[in-house]
Image 1 (tube, rainbow, N blue to C red):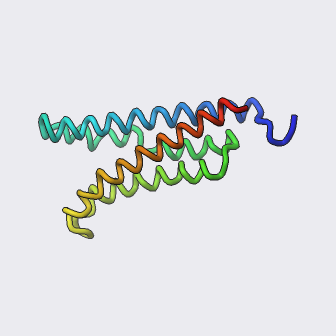
Image 2: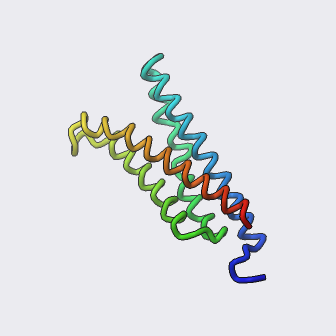
Length: 134
């Protein structure tokens, strides 16, 4: 076995990473759905939107940890860390009205969400490619 050939442990780490990344995308879509319910149906749904984040906010950190087990490229590790930073920025824009005028942080919140979604899809695609090409 050469140095670049992944071991079974690496393959399991890559599979877990892929599963976590898919779960993260599904959670992001659910989060957007809850926001849509709150905006277009009933504002009481904001509670679902604000509470649901606690279910998946640590997934990028778990992805980062499993990226080491799977011996994924450094770029994918940075992207996993970037997902975690973007979640922090989402928290900041949701609660920053004392630092930044609310209209600016509120406008940045969905933009950051789009970047978060695009980056998570990219990470998931790369993880799937890494798993396919042993």
